[in-house]
Image (cartoon, rainbow, N blue to C red; front, side, top):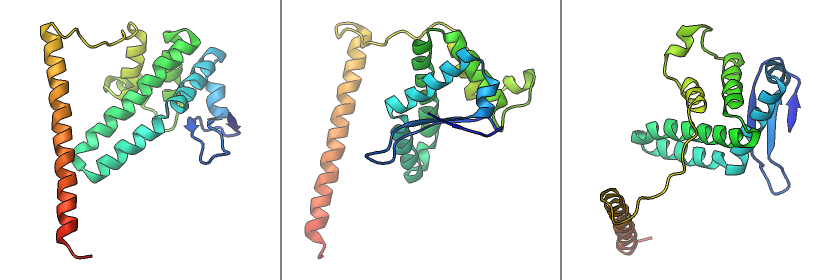
Length: 188
């Protein structure tokens, strides 16, 4: 953990850059001053969850995909929100209270630079922070399991998964075939 002497409140997870480097949670003294001790534990658990699950890799992959294909730009927003919710749930499990994590997320968003205007108008927009807080104040998500094969939902889910797999394999086969054809046809 690295505590920076800065009155501007911020916190982030900094993944290791080399073989000898270590993952680091960076937090400013301004952020620490804005949160109570339970909320600080939630903040650290949230940032450690990002590092443990390597969320930066998912975010980088989806950002590169969105740069390559503009139609994938909404995917970046969805993956970023999902990574935050994932870290929220991990933090809630670590500190033992979804309410404490919700309070920490809300306070951190309010004191961070670029925070919405105080008051009800700031929370009227269904942005990511109000959605995260609402999700944390609701019931915990249940573990998702695939439905049994011999039900209507199970048959549909497994058929869709099989069709998607066959389509992906067919596309990969076509790409490899095209590569070898172009390699053989073009002089190097």
